[in-house]
Length: 168
Image (tube, rainbow, N blue to C red):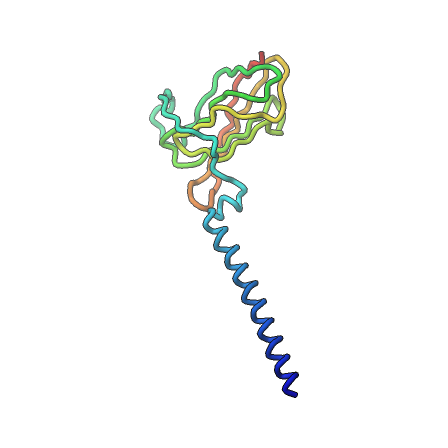
């Protein structure tokens, strides 16, 4: 009878130890993820490591209107057959939101490039596109999505900036 009682105590002790270890692992996973900003991870968005400070003057064409500043693009030139592009993807200083760029060509809905989030006052100045283009003229769409800068990363109004793309 004492052997069974001893085995029961040992079994209860082992089971308790397993439960405590499992609880500790679960708590560690939960708290370690919270340190990494759960809203951004849940949305699949991260702040770009490639973005650098941008301190060049831009012409203000807003006419004094308040709101999110969206950069304009006139004509853009890239090299034929190249996947490395030098185009400035900017989030103007003074915006109170993150920008994310998705670049499409002509009527395609599939982006050839998508940026991570760009902080206000920063820009990505070079990046890799998914496929090279042949020489010619295209309509490039710089689709800008804006997000709040809190942990929710709620979507704000964005813009589709069109420009002429010269591939030479």
